[in-house]
Image 1 (cartoon, rainbow, N blue to C red):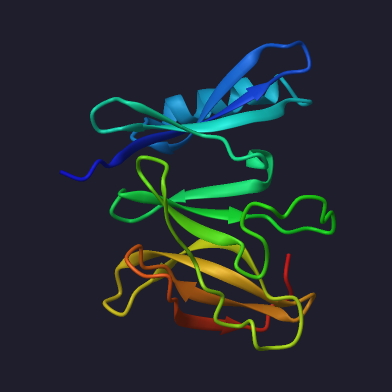
Image 2: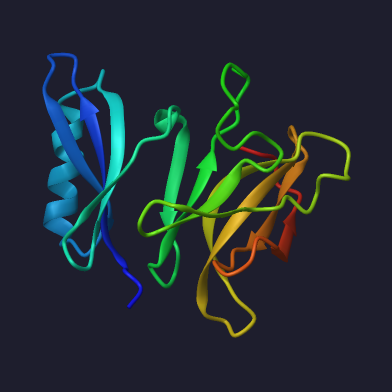
Amino acid sequence: MTQKITMIYRNYISDSGEVVTARQFGMVSWEESKADKANLKHHPYSKPLGVFWILDDLRPVNFNPSIFHRISIDVLDDRSGVLVIHNVDDDRADYSFLPPPNNAAIFNADGSLRFVLENPLTGCPGELNFFRAVDVKDENGEKALGICIAVARGQGLETFLVDGSTPDLKSVVRSSRPNI
């Protein structure tokens, strides 16, 4: 049986040295989620320490690449793994983990690499990095996980449907809205 992800947590260390854990994904009540966010607000200078998730069998999986503070993590629709995006910014100090333009990957629930996503816009001019994960509707109108590619600074973005079984992306929508 394939393990499924139940919860994702991020650990932070506050300016006073206290370790704070916050849920990013999972079956939590509104009150629990609100309490997590309130707990972090007391530590405005907190720094990320790492990420871990809990599987169906309650086993924790640590996921701490060297640049964990520069990644975003979203659970695949079937909870069999996660989409990880290395957030590309002007500080190009460390791109040893998921270098652009293919700066996104799918990892299995056990933390092993499934595959690196292939950026379909690498032949186009401009900065073409994976930007952020979004909710989209698939061809059946169902909610699905999507990924945005920043087409060029200030020129908009293109959104693709993420399929956890292939590194190939399917185009969903083109937006002329400026990048945020």
